[in-house]
Image 1: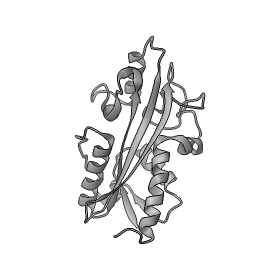
Image 2: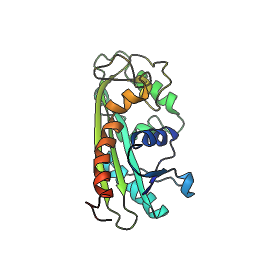
Image 3: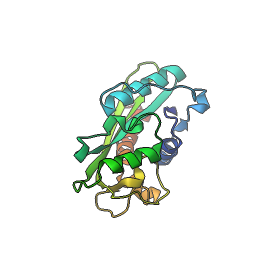
Image 4: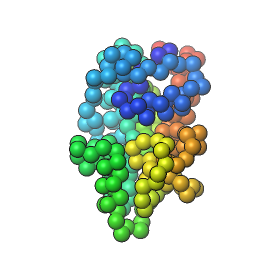
Amino acid sequence: MEIVIGTTNPGKVKEYRELLADIPITLLSLDDVNLGHMDVPETGETFMANAQLKAKAYAQASGKFALADDSGLCVDALNGAPGVYSARYGGEGLDDAGRRQKLLEQLTGVTQRTAYFECVIAVAHPQQQTCLIAQGVCEGKIALEESSGAQGFGYDAIFIPDGYDRTFGDLEAHIKHQISHRGRAARKLIVMLQAFLSDDLPK
């Protein structure tokens, strides 16, 4: 079974290949199916809506099963922001480092720094346009400053998961995969895919 990973983010592609390594599927990048140019606008108002929107678009364009997720960081002191706008926080001119810096600046002097990461993964059927859906959440807090850890991507260097004193950017990959929002969603998805591959679900 081949599944296209619907993202241009190399960090996500790498994580999914690690997270789904134990099931008999072949994960293809967008470049593998000549869709590296394709960008699906995230017009949904929820993580679930955006994940399904992207998965269905990539499945239709590739003619293959397609996996897409929408995930983001929700900060309590910012009323849930950046949320679904995590990848676009601060405007198009900012890169990951700029978005992390902006968020830290927004929390200057704030002592209540609780936050959580949420991830919704959708796998779309190429003909039926139906989706398998899995969701995961990881609670934690925003660090006072960015860590020097080189692991991860996005906001990982400023997010400290509950039960740890290091950011995602400092944690070894196998630990992060166990506790992260994406890791938790992926484990739920694996159960669904195993059932699918065992013919418990219609192809």
